[in-house]
Length: 325
Image (cartoon, rainbow, N blue to C red; front, side, top):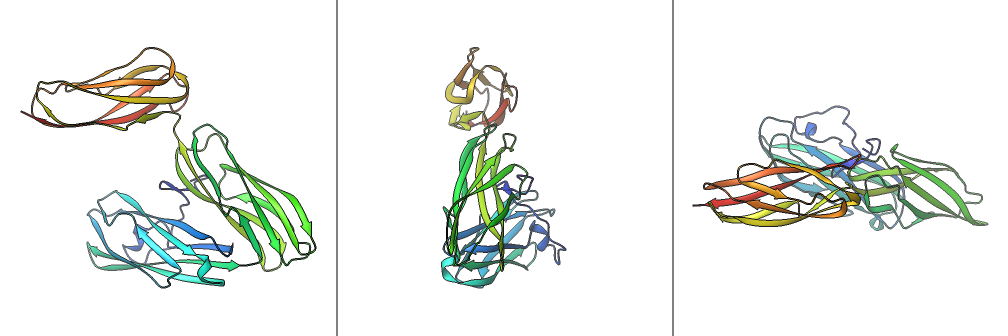
């Protein structure tokens, strides 16, 4: 994804396995991650995306690693059909020097006992340093073009040079500039810029730096960014708790944009749910959600705020309540 080389958590990195040996292997969008040549010190992170593409629930019973330098966390142990989650692998490069390959074993118990083997590998080196160790663009609004810079310094290589730099995603634009050079040390400023049409979501991707150093053809630099919609509703759920039938309760929500806008309508009002709004153009709107249920039951409805913004002009929020007699 960021070329859809980002993996979303939504994650900007999705690669399919060459061939699934079992049904459980097929739950994972990829079975391996090679971090390549990395500076010794940082903790490397990768999210393996997991999707239940079966017709029944899948239960994971455990995760094991073959080395203490790697930890792995499965963020959800039970998946209903169609649900997805991620397995986060963290590789501590302070725990080894040189090439290292670690196996992550994931076990299932439902619909049947099965074992999936993932692996991560990296080559931790002391002859270059990244500061900071990742392009972290943080939270940005959709439509913006944020930039981030890091310094890459080579040690022990006479005349070391960067020959090119390229983002793995088409949504990133990368460049480099030499900052200083001594006999056996060279420092470069690396810059990455995000395109304004990068999709909404949390993304992970890599930027690859090519060098003329024998044995170090490429250096991987991870990039993370959380692209927010130009519209944000807070809170995202109008939670009323327990409400008596034929009584009224109100909740206020804030709808915020990147500039003045009008709310043209709110779709989904029905069954005793009413939304009051302003007709003015402004950057921050306060809307009032009112429920007046006629009978006992459960209210769980998604409403959509529609605005006059040219792009990404709508956003959803949920209304829920337990209605008693």
